[in-house]
Length: 492
RNA sequence: GGCGGCGUAGCCAAGAGGCCCAAGGCGACGGUUUGCAAAACCGUUAUUCGCCGGUUCGAAUCCGGCCGCCGCCUCCA
Image (tube, rainbow, N blue to C red; front, side, top):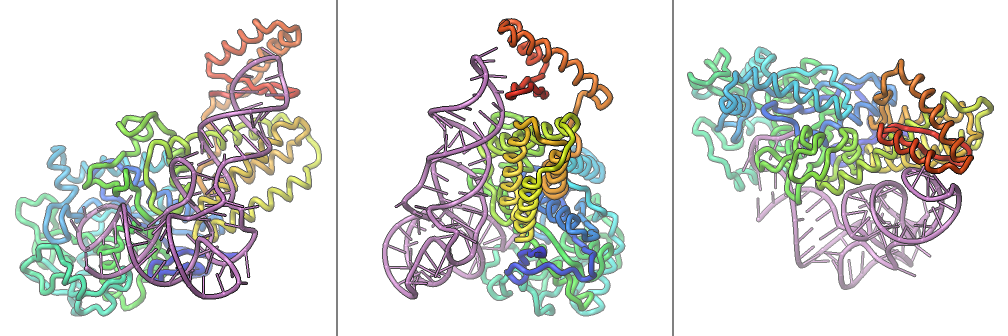
């Protein structure tokens, strides 16, 4: 079995075969950094994080590039309107680059908490102005673009394949056009490659066509080419960017290079709130910082970052996710159950007796792994993959109930939690926060002294004393669990 | 108006012609265990997949119609 992914270009699930054996180049449209990341961003970047993680699980050598848009993204269509970053900077009375830096850091902070593996390269649009000017120059030379009044536009009529990704044709778009057309354009569907800057525009660069700044679509073409080559294996992004953004990327890149730009287009669906798309423009978004702290009117409590991650993985990346507090609450409960089980397994790994590994368990674990891989190979069916994690939880709990379970058996269970839940899904951590690694052993000894005292009291039917000990420990955040022939403890 | 998609239990959600009288999670209820609790475990919770027709030996899955919802066509992950 190999990985199959849904390719938006062919509208089919296809077997994934990279251009170069064993190597994968993947480019994902990153955020425009003019505000804190919200749950919509989380769905996007968690989805692609799982793709990258799974490719690495399959032993591919992956180069993951995800841009940071800090210039060129306008508030209106690609030709009118203000630059998003510049506008936000004006409001916050900061230099646009300071604002972009602030939100870039915020973004990485949130993604780290969601356990998204950092991209290998996070190129900034503003750091690639020369390359963007270079691409515009090539397009002009090849006759795919024209300069007008200090700006440069892509001549859509020259590129026959325009519309192949989003499945629309130029005539239809002309008929349905709702955008005010710039007088400089030959054709309403032409899009800006380079925009002339007015003198008071802060972010501007000199160019052969006068001072200006790049069009939004340009950066992704240029940066993916620079770091991954003219033809890349996978390009990821949100469904809402399929048109015009990705369509324009294809036009620019293929016109300039004369070769296929992207082999597999992977698009994820949107997060909605009350059935409406969550977005900055609708102002109905919940930022990740709000979700983690609970500081939002739609939230009844704070949520662990990985519970948010689990909510996202609970549905398919190509399905829309309608956000609700109830759904997040459920994900938090489920996530907590997995976490507690993993912690318990790891704790018992050290204390369990030595002995042979149960063959029956080995077989069951193998089946679980196969089921997990089959699900992931089928266009990253994380929903089913998660269900496998819960099957593993149930199996682990049964083993935990049994004092005869050996160290080796627990070890195998832990390996599966690590490989599947950790490496692939990113919901199982390598280490959970403890009192401090050095103190952990001491802590365990101390609590065990108290457990012994309590069990002594229980044996003597002195329940008042037993309950007092339990209550006191509970107040300190330590929960005791009485099993048939032993008592274990965990932190709350 | 054009293009694309969705509608599965109280909630989230997988399944895409027979393995489905439909995974998994949350919640609820009953039980086991326990001195009591907590946790865990076991069981119950959709004879049915928006509605109506059709194709087929067989449909949640394919086709047609209807109803409802969403995305894109303007910035948005």
